[in-house]
Image (cartoon, rainbow, N blue to C red; front, side, top):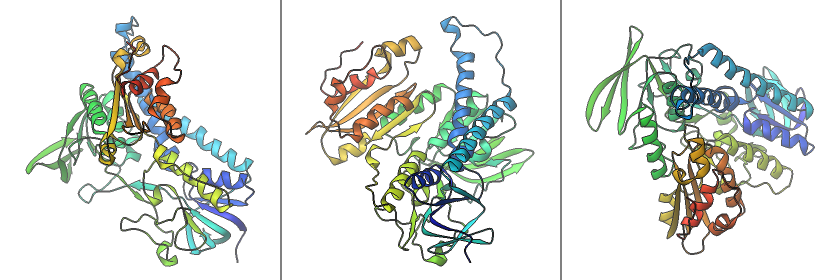
Length: 460
């Protein structure tokens, strides 16, 4: 017999799951949320939030060591207290987790702790107890992909989880994978003093980013001391005397690289282990992602899914929007996600932020017009000594519709919000170019790049 009956049970308390649970409660549903580990999921506990805390701390360290003296700020001795830095990161996570717990209590959401297993379309088993609901929402997220040649051991060969909690700075770190997690973690440990080498199977970093922007960021990271080797696969690893020796192949030539630690960041897989999806008949694609329709419904009536577990862009804010849309659709409302306006950000320094189409994607669809503006010509950037990078605006050559905005620069993660709103409201490029932008500010570079699509940029 079921312990309780609910309108909705959400399986997973990451950004997508807890946001969906809260929105469902706001809509008057009786809601429970199952989480086998911790509120906040990967993003809050071992992903987005702790990594950004470390990225910010190490960026401040890098500034103190290398950039403040030219501005007349002299710090004679700068040292790293790694345990304290890690403690600050953990404190940030703890406070955020407690905040979600408060929101659950405020919205009368029942938190069920344990492994969830669907035994029927309307029944989930947690720690031997059965709970029933009219609808189930799977929001179990994703986990790092493990390579057969580089099995995680948590000590020598690491996933991103262990890389966020190393007790000491490795002398040499090899990062396998040049995606956003790889370059962010490379930045953290390089700033802390590691010699970092990134091995990437493809010809460049950040394969889903605009090529010009990704290449420009790569060059800046190389200036910061991070080394890259492209068109390279890691074929095997041997561990001896506290070192990891990796056999690599680059364009048919084999070589061996030695490091203190190896971090593997080659993508993420959906977490569906133990959920009972196969037994229930829930359809998944060849890679294991749950298949859903436009309303986030699976092929099993009453069972829905959102976030990383359904694939697509695997970002926390994408999962949040899907969670809200899914429960609003369940409630008969007009839930919708505009994937065209979903931003993506790489939190290196400078940051790389983008929304909409890359130049490569846009040109495949038809004629485009492109405007660029460098931060070297932006007065605020000069005053902040943050002149690396530029803005690229892509518009439709036929009707001026805004197709994409790409920002490589300090604070790009904040500046991209303007472009997201513009994309959401189907703006034209001219709309950005004619809108007020306070002077002097970094976002003026967005306006100037928009004007540059018609050769009208004017700021110096």
